[in-house]
Amino acid sequence: MAGSSKIATLRTLVKLLFLILLAAGGWFIWALRAPITPPEPKFVLLHPGYSTRRIAAELKAAGVIRNSDIFLIWHYLHRRGSLKAGEYLFEKSANVLNVHERLVHGDIYIHTVVIPEGFNMFEIAQAIKAADLGSSQEFLNVATSDTSLISDLAPGAKTLEGYLFPNTYQFTRTQSMPEMAAAMVKQFRQVAKEIGLSKDIEKTVTIASIIEKETAVPDERPMVASVYQNRLAQNTALQADPSVIYAELLEGKYAGSLHHADMQFDSPYNTYLHTGLPPGPIGNPGRASLEAAMHPAVTGYIYFVSDGSGRHRFAKDLEEHNKNVAYYRKLMGVKP
Image 1 (tube, rainbow, N blue to C red):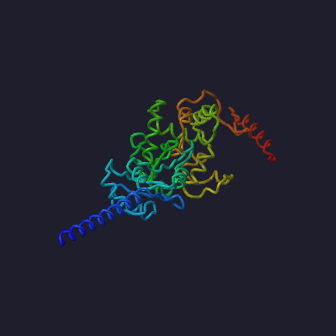
Image 2 (image 1 turned 45 degrees about the horizontal axis):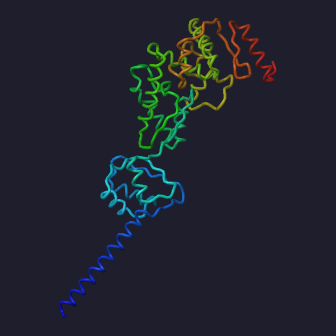
Image 3 (image 1 turned 120 degrees about the horizontal axis):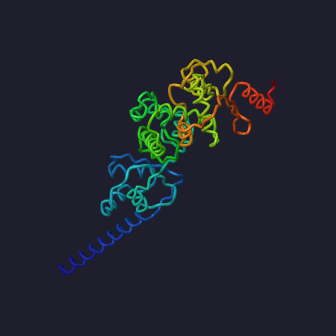
């Protein structure tokens, strides 16, 4: 009788244990598969070197998963690769399985940074900031100091201006500012190699940066290049308005437009006050402007002025230039 009672008790315990395990298993499966829908898009930045436990804690704190222990158990039971560092965007319903799979595959969020032709380092810094990749000052600190990136190309360069090639870049928040700048310089090197730019690099890039700022019309670039080459040959001041703007930008004094008094702004970049090229590029030229600087048109032009339609009128002497200026003023409704 006593033996039968013990057997019955043992069976009861076994059943109870089975029910507990069944319940625990059911809860575990539910915890794995039950999705969470974030109330709003949520970014989670997982830095390189984070442990799996730290990653699970970050996901839990962000409300991406319900239970960090469940995430850890699944990871250790279901190893299919390491979890990748990076920034992740969670905006759709997902469960632990989905989240773990994304981290294994490294489905990180990519920030797109568009650098148009002609952007200077200040504008690039703002584009970096707008893409939420860091502060503009952080990028400027690199652009004005890390000249070792271009020491073989431009040994006299004081900044990376001119060598941060215009392009559409894909960056992540785990990349450093020096890495982003290096990617832009790498792109410059690639284009320079493709077009055969291997000598007089500093001079060519500086001229190209001015061309880029002066005209957006492709077929005009070689003619604009010829104007500056002719002026350099005559030792005549280049008188490029964009150089004055850049001079004021460097000093933090550009007010958004140029006036006659600005032409006297004291700076080696002011090509109204100083003959020859400015000390360095005033922006970052694209491929077409670099090619125009390498292969200027053969002309006698030493002047050009806007024609009011986005193009320019070129002149070989001051008399012709004054006529072009008068035409432009009349077109703009400016009284003589």
